[in-house]
Amino acid sequence: MTDTDTDTDTTPLHDPMAGEPSEGMSPLAIPADTQWDDVDRPRDWQGHVYGLVVHTTGSGLPSKARAQGVYHTVAAVNHYSKSHGCHYVNGWLGVGGGDLLQVANEREQAIGVGMTNPAEPEKDQRRSVESGRFEEDLPAVLVRHWRERWPGRADPLALLPGTKTANSCYVHVECVPCVFHTDDGLVTGEDVEPMRPGLRFTQAQHDTVAELAVDVARRNAWPADEEWWRTPRLLGHEDLTPIARCDRNGGWDPGALRDEPYFDWEYVYERIGSILRDGPGGSSSDHDASDAIQPSVFDVLGERAQSFIDLVLTGEEQAAVVEAHGAGVTDENELTDLVFFVHHPEMNGRKIKAHETALADEWRDVRDVVRTALDGLSGG
View 1 (cartoon, rainbow, N blue to C red):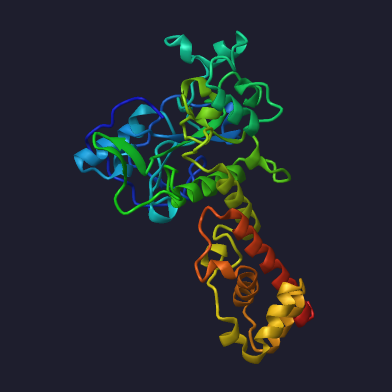
View 2: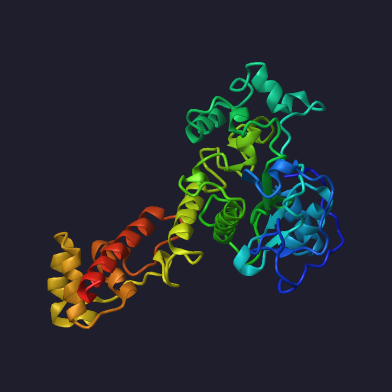
């Protein structure tokens, strides 16, 4: 987040079909017509950036855009094309809705995170750490969440890869909150909703953070044999400079380090795992856990339905798949839904919600069992 007012003019957005992305440009993002070009990051980090920092623009930007009748992503692009504070803007509709915009090549060094702040010593993270006051300078709730998030790390400086600054080695993405403060109080953007009550960002924005992180990781050769998304390669502004990004209830940029969070890292982590396992759609086909629909077992399987249910409930899921296959059900996704919803009759036909990551993981585990059974039936 950069504390500067949004400009009122409207910078046009670039045609996403206009050519292939070049080095340092994401194929996921629409390049803004105005690309800021100021200070190149150190040569050793060009094409080899260490990580991605996730920010919130804060309420000021969407509130002002709303008052002026300007689309929030256009307002954000106008601002960040001039402020040099980030490389990407993530609007409410995310990459799938054309709301991921790139405002600078990744070789440029953004001014997204200031580890030092001589003008405001009370917000100087390096000074706080080096004076031995890291915990004393923060609300207790923030210290607790920071310690839980980064076990084994002494302080924010220990998150850096041996550098003095974060900006030299990180890419920055600004997310426009869909729930924000205005003169009328806390409001939600038109025709959108947060991923779940209490959060400040849409599911599409969470998904976009995951997709962008995977894209940056692949283009910059992050180690594929480790869960890099659970390391300091992917973090929030509040993780690096909590002293400057907090209120009495915890961190607010993007707002995960608080008892009632604004942003859901665990969802992003699960989404990244799904993308790496199954591709951007989250599965080898277009059907994933969130698409699961409860079928009527008796309508689908007829006289074999009770036998199928008994096998599932006694842990004989592969045998249940064979039973259903014998009744003519051969589609992997339909079989997965049949087995999953026998375990969860209490869902009463509703879909798995975005924040129900444990249920989504269970659905995918069932799908793996179904695949194994189908492979056995086909002699694979």
